[in-house]
Length: 429
Ligand code: GLY
Image (cartoon, rainbow, N blue to C red; front, side, top):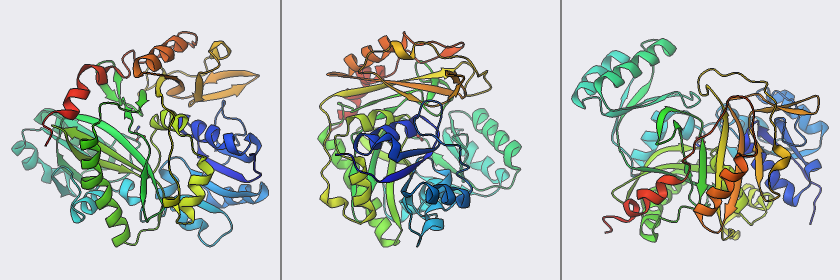
């Protein structure tokens, strides 16, 4: 039943379009504001969401009762703390809890303190001090800048030269004195486990897998994500239980022991090696493009889940999922993640099948036309009875859309068929 509660979603990408659509299924599009949104999200409004006073004014003028925060920056900047004690509720962790994503050092120390399965690490605050560790590990390591760096602060290295190049890049950006960590590199299969927490329990959505590198075969530079699928049928109950015991449960214990004010989304970036899970990172928000395949599969009312979290009653909700696979192909601007041209008209959006979901990311509307305006431009999401069917449907629909310099990966979801299933289940204990 349609209700008349106004909410505001903060953010401008495909994740926020998927969130807005999900909320609008049980509210109405008139009730769901997206700030600033983009050219494809109905009811988008150009508001400076980093200016919390401006945001508050917008919310008051539009009777917004609740804010759902898409990206990490407003959480790290303290949006939850700003609105505490006011009439508008904000769904997300407070500034201190958001350090689980905003500070790699804070997160690793938390993982260590609560005995969460993760890679070994050392903390540094001067680039010169890292030389010995790099030489000792023969460059086979991961370097992580402590703060938020929009995906540009993590360097996965295989050689001393690569590690030294990473240090050089950090020095150019921040100078020699900066906080960072060096972590043991764990090679395996990376999966995203995303759920909700009210601080008393954590409830998970289905597992998903992002494709972070630009080129087919997982080659080329890291991006925000070039495609995703869900669920991952190869994950055994045995592996899921290990993830629960070694990562999720101790995380909840830590949140409670530290008395964190955390009512929001929690994202576990997990590497699976020899059927053992290791936590690579926390994010304190939904993943993008994972959200675009997770929310279409979720049968529950998202507004109900969020209000249950805010009132500490998440345990009353039972998640239900559609019995189908979802695949998302990201259409990007050629040149992304480096420089790219934009402003190209997107054609074919009306030609896709009625079951196709198109989530806009970097688009804008001008003179009735939709133009590309960012690196990741569109997400094309289809479902199927099998993963292969979902992928085939999505790639068929992708072929109907075009804009100048459009680029997309041709191998989304392919690695699961090739080897993931056997690797997830090898070495069963
Ligand atoms: N898909 C990875 C992220 O959202 O951080």
